[in-house]
Structures are given as structure tokens and as C-alpha cells.
Amino acid sequence: MSDYAAAHTYQGVPYGEPMTPTRTVIESLAQQVRVRGDQPVITTASAAGEQRTMTFADLDRLSARTLGWLRERAGVEPGAVVAIAPANDATSVLTVLALLRGGNPTLLLNPTDPDDRVRRQVAAVGATAVLRSAATTFSDGVDLVDPDAITDTAGADAAPDPLGDALYIGTSGSTAASKIVAQSYYNAAANAAGLISHHALRPGDRVLGCLPIHHVNGLHFTVFGAIIAGAHVLLADAFRPFGYPRLLDAFRPRIASVVPSILEALHQTWRSPTPPPGLEYFVSAAAPLTSGTARAVLDRVGVPVLQGYGLTETTNFSATMPRGLTPERYRALMVDTDIPSIGVAFPGNEVAVLGPDGHPVPFGEVGELCMRGHNVMNGYLHNPDATREAFAHGWFHSQDLGYQVRDEHTGQVFHRITGRSKNIAKVGGTAVSLDEMDRFLRDRAGIRDAACVSVPHPMLGEEVVVAVVLDHDTAIGAVRDLLGTAFAAEVLPTRVVPLAAIPRTPTGKVLRPQLAELLAT
Image (cartoon, rainbow, N blue to C red; front, side, top):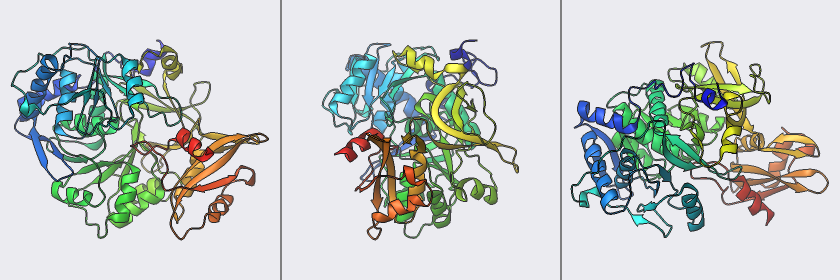
């Protein structure tokens, strides 16, 4: 078996043998229309508080109408690659679904990306059209049209290969140059099946989402997951700290999808937290969660946070904390620990910790987290060398370092991430994890945020520089002293720089190249 085939195998079942009831989001939508067509599936909420609710039948009818507009008015040919910069609104959701049902591989763009980055990505995938939502700031493209304003002419559905490319998504490029990930139609179905299994999602369940749908978590968890599960999602246009509790109260979700920065803002601004009945937990992903944030949310808000982990290359999730843990086990794994666990392997994929030779390392020993399964991407578009390297030894290589432990109480295998393989600085020959320094500082009182970078040094090879966002009463000199209690003197930072904010991606990942440039000036 080739490395590529092995990396797409789940528990011995090849990628070409689907393990899901339907193989695409559009097949699932058609099934839901037959069973519960008049039930709500998506409610969008704008900044002004306006809400629009669509049933499964609405979603089916209006996305078909949008496909007709794309064919007749926007010049989108069947099978052509299209780029879209979606907002968290009904028109964008319907257009993405229209492109899926039309068999048009779709590049997801960040609506606020600069023109040059947009043009590079559009050229890289060969997109024949660029579609702009109301949130778009770049100049090129065709504006999306609300399907209510379109003549009721439906476009003919295509029948794309479920294993063919459906979505193109640029990686964040937070540690290296961005690549274009190709996800298949079946990847989306496999990820949604995992969500349904792991979270026991049932028809009518309510999920609150506010993450941008041009990112995998916002699109796959919030939108596709709800459609395939038969659930009802409230898709907020953005996160607003003072408005979010009102959304929780009004919608009363069972699950809320967030990122760590949202949780941090929430526990700081929600003055008298009274979560609505039925809110079972927050799901946090996209960036590392600190034990301090998990503790603050549990103690102040009274709701646990289940940390998840995944990459664009694995569609959405690869591991997630399980439901149903006792309070004692939850605290041991998420709160009373230096590194909160990312949980157990997500259904539909397997997770291993491998050494450089591609063989598993013993439990408790640090290695590279690697995954294989039906949620693994098709590859990096037009980059066979990077794809080959990513699938070496028959696993997808995440470049994240971590280890596994078997919980003696549950028997489950839990995973912890210690850092990125590329986020290691060598100071005078001594290796130090920048992620470990970040994590240590973010858990200290008086430090709101922190991130470390390595910069060249003529004698030492590299030196560490720290950027911090401090409370007003925290002295800059205290930062190095704090690090001195946990790290060897030879790797301590040569500079500590106060900033108003740490540069991050919209999902919370530190943009270390940009931070290094900022600290070099």
C-alpha cells in the first residue's frame, strides 16, 4: 500500500469505501429535506440584532436558485474553480452550498485579506471567478446577491466525485509559507459523521457558532455539521463580548463553538454569568487553550470547555476531549495540569505519536502527532513534493509535538501537545520550546497575552525575544524574573517588549514571522 493510501485508511477501511450514510453535504441536505424539510437548520444573526431563520427546505431551494444565478449571471461554468470570500450571513452560506451542488471546487478567502494575497491565492488555484460578500475589503470580484432578489431559476446539480476536490483553503502560514489544502466532498461528510458520533448530535440539537466560515472550524463544525446532523445552528456574524451572553440566553444551545480568545474575553467581561439551562459545554479549538482559561471558565461561568485539535489538512478535528467525564477526571485532564489535553482520537481518524523513523514512541515520550483516516486532505494543490512529505510512512505529519497517556480511570488514550517542531529555538546549542515559554507566561497573573520568537545572534546562533501584553500594574522587569523560575538562565530572553496586542490569525494562532518582523524594528 502506498503512503498516500495508508494515510487515508481508517481502521483498515480504504478511503474509497465510505463509512458515512451519505458521501457529500448536498446528499445529506436532500435527505434532511425529505425527513424534516420544515424544521429550522440555520439562523443567522447580524450586528444589528436582525435574525433570519432557514429551514432545510429553504436551504435546498435557495441554494439551487443561487446556483442558477451563478451559471446565468456570474458566468460560473460547471466544474470551474471559484473563489469566495464569505461572511457569516445567509447569502454566503447559500452560495457555498450552491458551489458544492454545482461541482465547483471552491477557494475560501479571508474577506479582510489584502489584495495581493487574494490575487496570489486566486492565481494559485486558477479560479475563474471571485465572489465577494458584504464583509469583503479587497477590490476585485463579483458581489454576492441575496437569493430572495433572484429570479426563481434553479441550476442543475452536478454529480461530482465524492473523493474529488471540493474546497481549497490556504493554511494560516503562522510558522511557514502558506500552502493550499485540497479537501474532498467526502472529507466534509466524514468530519460531520465524527461530530455527530463524538458529541451525540441529534436532530433539533442547538449549536451556537460565531467563528468565521472562511475557516474550517466555522464552516465544517457550525454549518456542515448542523446540516448533516439535522441540528439547528445560530450563526452569529462575529463574536461580541457584551452581546454573546444575550445570544446564549435567547438561543439556549446545547453546545457553543469558540476559540480560546473568546473564552478569555467572556470570563473577563461577563459580570454575573448565568449560563442558560441546557448549555452542556463549550468546544474550543484552533489555538492552544491554557489551563488558566479552562479553570476561569469552569469556576466563573460554570461550564466546562472541551478542547479540540485539528488542522486544515485533517478537515476540522483530529482529537477532542470526550463528553461524560466525571468532574474529577475533567479537572485532572484540563484544569489541574500544566498542559490541558486535546482529548482522544476523533471518530473517523487515528492518532499516533511517531519518532523520526516513522515508528510509534512509548507512551509519555514526546514525538510528532500524526494522523490517518477519512478526514485527511487530498493533498496540497499543485505541490506534489509537499504532499509526499506530509504523508511519509503512511501518516499525515502535523509538525506538532506531543505525547500520549492512557488514563488509568477510563482506559482511554489522551493526547497532549507540547509545541510545534518548528517553534524550537537553539540558544548557544541549548534547545528551548517557544510554545512552552508562551504557555508559561500566559498562565501568570498580570500577563494578558505573550508570545516568543527566536532571532539570529552572531555568537549564540539564536536568542529569544518575548512580546507581552501586560496589566497596568505589572512591571516589564517581572517577566524575565518569572521565566527565570522555570527556564535555564542561558535560554532566557534578551529582550521583553510590551505590545498592545500580539499578532494572531483570526482563529488565534500566533503569527510568529510577523511578530519577529515587528520585534526587529
